[in-house]
Image (cartoon, rainbow, N blue to C red):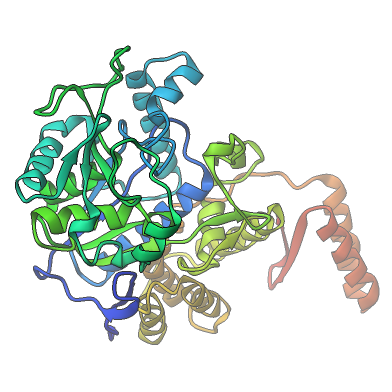
Length: 460
């Protein structure tokens, strides 16, 4: 199999670049995890499918991947301007549980969702609350290098100390300084952000720790810089997240890394784009969002949602619809049945393997890779060759094609009666009647495949 070079879009440089590991052949990959104050919604999960596809493609190309993913269980305030309540404290009040209890509850639900979607779990899970010492040490490093200042509210990063602050987002700092107000008393610049927040003087928080500056808790951004550097080093291969991280969270991670380590933390910065409902970003903050369990309750296999997301490039917004899910369900069912009926695998077809590899190595072009998959299905290649080749593809698609088995489902007598009528019409060469009966069968949710052995009926 001929391998095309792997090219990835780097948000930092705004260009496609050939990927070469910093420490060949090993790859360090960091992905921003969930803030576990509520369930993950399917928009969140689209991002984790993108990151799973990336990891699988790296491994498909022969690179061993150390995949680190954090769990944010403290410090993420409801406003990116460092105001408002900690989302964990807010979630605890909403549920009547402690912040620690909801962190455990929603972390487990999140992991269950990943498993249901065939998303590989990270090599290393790391929780913010397990790494308070590392975060304090990073803040002390920034303090020693002159990047911090104290307010009544906490310890803040002084973005004015970095001429290129916000380069990832291409921020116009002069315009922002003129047009933004400072929301936190004592904050010098609108773009400055909290490294450590002090606990309120009149109450005890559920999650708080001693620090050199006073009792409190870490800001949201410090955890990723600290934990990524701990497990992958201060400059590693790829950092991922959602597109919303481009404008605040990831510029702040980079600022912290530059202030302490002198690096931009990652060689590649990659971002998955939003899933949308009627052209609006799906968000948990409105309280109106779709969980994976919502799809399951409506009768969808979780992998139907994975297939649905493969129809769009990760750097394109994707509109969710039930019609799209129905189409994905039919397509996945046909793909599964085809792969099952091909029997045992033989030798991989090199031409199709090269075509598939070229697409996935072109910045994870899954729509084109999926088109190649369907071209393979419709080809005249021997079944054993098609089976081996599609199983190779499924190392990236992760649709579980090797293990799928058809359900033992009895076809209703009424449907079988229509099938027999159609067979009689075909025997009489009454093709309009045969076509009309096929349409009637399809309208009832079944499809007929004409084979040498006779008609084969299955649910669509």
